[in-house]
Length: 404
Picture 1 (cartoon, rainbow, N blue to C red):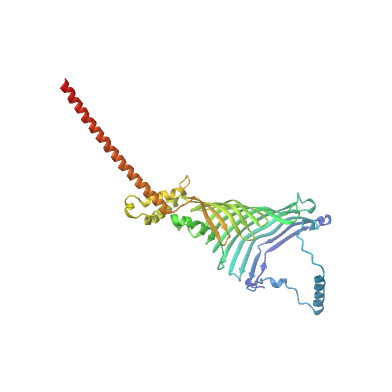
Picture 2 (cartoon, rainbow, N blue to C red):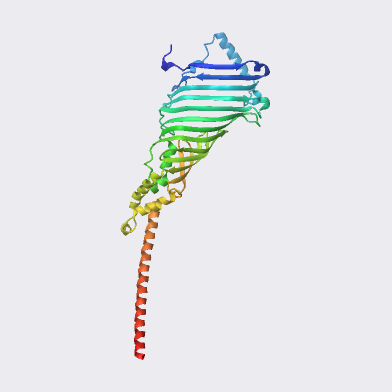
């Protein structure tokens, strides 16, 4: 018996099915290797060792065995070094045909004592299947299908990171081309449709930068009405991976407050970002943004301008460039930097400063006042002309009467 806290791994059952006759024909056919209800606990200690590291340590050697090992090491050191060659399809001794490999209904706990991060991956059903790799016919047999469904959540968070906490559902299907058909080298190309049927996250850095981007904060104030805790349903994205670059397309995420679409690329090695995203706020938030803008506009309306420039009108003018045809606030972003330090810029609409909007409003108001003065002057001039004409008519009538 082993205490629950000390268990590295356990499972209800394992299924292993292999076909022997194909081995005689140079083919490896594994029908199934599945773990059912596995429980896996992984701990990384501050020393860098894992809780399973002792399984990798060989038994103590006798003096004779130690001497023999040292002799072999000296012989290996004397040989000219050969650079390790990357794996090629031709290095496979047999064609590979595998039905399915993976786990069903698994639970994985990971605790990293070096960073303080604790994660739980739950309800894991992950498998690769229909694996067909034939070095003699790589054009037709170089494919692996995969399917993953799981939930992943934080149990504790590190001191720094791109997100504080999360609980996300993951549903992925796709295929992998393990060997490059031209070079025949192992260089996986991956095609995935990744969905997130549910999720919530707190302190997501990219999202925080988007809702508090400097251009908007100076113009309309921070979108404080959008929650720090974000949640979503039925998000998805298409992913293509090759040579450390993950290309994202048709990404979509949303809830009652907003909808996001996104695409671009992520360098998996450096976590460098090159993304574009559109955010559409729910129409119910348009009036909130106008109210915030109106409050900010007050400090720019001074002196006599207060008599004829209203902050509500300034807010109307300021928010108008943000609105789409449906009256919703629509914003386009470019996202660079890294996942932990994203650099988010608003690229549409192009916003100036609120003080400039107020100046235009004052100028327009002054122009309207001047037009009104001109109109009054014109009306008075017309009235005088009309009066003079009437006088002239009366004089003419008097002269005619005298003549008669």
